[in-house]
Figure 1 (cartoon, rainbow, N blue to C red):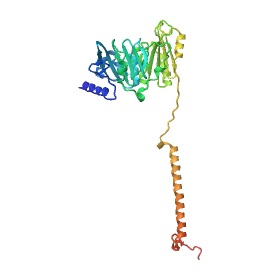
Figure 2: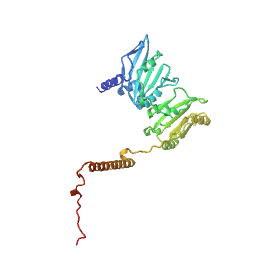
Figure 3: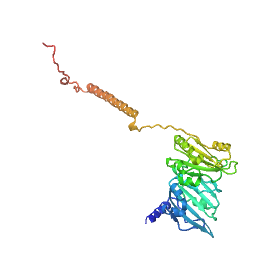
Figure 4: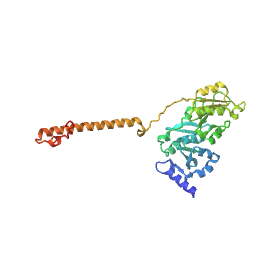
Length: 351
């Protein structure tokens, strides 16, 4: 019953107006009944990669089989918590040999009968030997355009150099499950993803017999990165690794850069110099709200005092003017009557 309710809820959330959902048919292609994938069905749908999907913030998915004149392909629409998780899953699903490009303003990858598109919190995955050229654009139209923070991709992958980059080798990592599938020489627990770390890795052809591996790990502060650098340098797995597999580590601000399997120290330095990282230091002072600001309070006090003085001044002018007018035009005394002008005298000098 619980799984059925989850499936119904997922179907409503993905198929409601204004939400993403795979169409039942397009351009002569007929889709099968939609298969809803919720968290309980994730293991059966993704196998041993289920932990990686959960790590990227998996919320749900729907899948259809499309067929036309004997050809067919499978379309899966993955829904993640945010664009950070969807971009990570996008890089995880991409494989060497695929070509990274853009479909509109969204990152896409294609090759080997596979097409991937990342848009906001969604990842569209198309697989099949009979994948038609019109399918990516037609099915991506069912995903609403990302708005606001949904379109913000993580900045860390933008630091990767582009010279010599092997296509589709980038992997954006936000947890140990995906990290352990990408690198085997650095223990995932040593990265400390629980402290807000993010990582991106890529492979490069820089003239050696085997590709170089660049890993960038970002930490919230430079101080934490400095501390983590000392911990990395003391790891036996790094300091006592195989002699035929080189490893170089360096810190840049809040980034720690690893270069693995470099053919020479010169090639390592050249690659690190291409890392497009620029430190940006900001100073944000706390400004108390108006109710807690002493300066605003004093300005309010002086404004109130000035307002009261103005009222007193104009009230005095008005009262004096009324007295003068009445004395001039009224024949009988109104304000200066004798009984009101008498003074009480004590006659202290009288003996």
